[in-house]
Image (cartoon, rainbow, N blue to C red; front, side):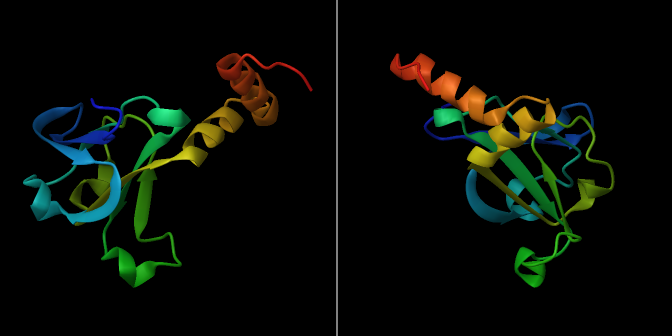
Length: 130
C-alpha cells in the first residue's frame, strides 16, 4: 500500500474472503453500491501510515448526515476485523487517517502516551531530554 495515499481493504465475506475493494482513507463517505460489494463482512486496516497516523473505518446503517451528533448509527473499526457481524449490511462506509488512533491504542495497551511520544520524538530527531 502506498503510504502517501492511505487505503483500507473491504471484503464481502468474513475472514478476508470473497470480493474485495480498496477504499481510500480520504475521509469521504461512500455508498455500499460504490464499492461494488454486496456487503462488508471483514476489513483489513494496514499498519500506521505517515507520521504515526492510524486508519479507521466507519460503517453506517443510516446516511451519516442524519446522525452527526449520535454514535448509535455507526460503528468504528480501528484494526483488522475478520467479521463485522451486524454491520456487514451497512449502507455507507468512510475511511480516514487519524492521529488519535495511535494514542488510543497506546492508552489501551497501558502505555504512558506522553513518555512514549517524547521517546519517539527523541528517536526521530536525536534529541533526548526533559
